[in-house]
Amino acid sequence: MAHLMDLKTFTDKRGNLTVIEKIIPFEIKRIFYIYGVDESKRGGHRHKKTIQAAICLKGSCHIYNSDGITENNYILDQPNKCLILEPKDWHTMYNFTSDAILMVLASAFFDQNDYIFEPYNK
Image 1 (cartoon, rainbow, N blue to C red):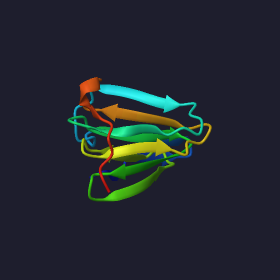
Image 2 (cartoon, rainbow, N blue to C red):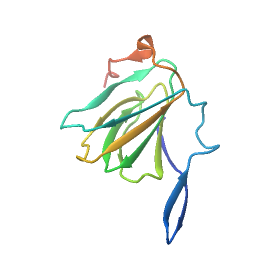
Image 3 (cartoon, rainbow, N blue to C red):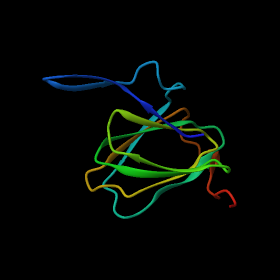
Image 4 (cartoon, rainbow, N blue to C red):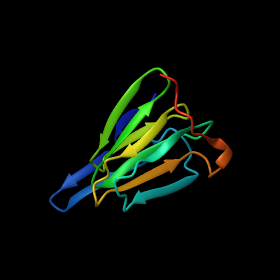
């Protein structure tokens, strides 16, 4: 099931430093980021094997998630929040602010055969 994690952040008068170290529950094989999104929804899939970690570095976006049993809506609006998406988590990203930058860390290289686009039956 998808879950939020707090990333360790050090704050002082100079600003913030957020660290991603020894917390992501997989070896990172791929990094991509999504930005400049209009009113469109992104995602609309789950995976056979890939685990993902989503971090909104700037602005905000919403992520709807269903694992076939439980449905949740998450708002990513802080760069020290990380949403872990398991392979079974069918998700869509939406309501991007105009300045949003959503970075995703993935446990596998891109493989179009890893994607399942059909949502779970309700």
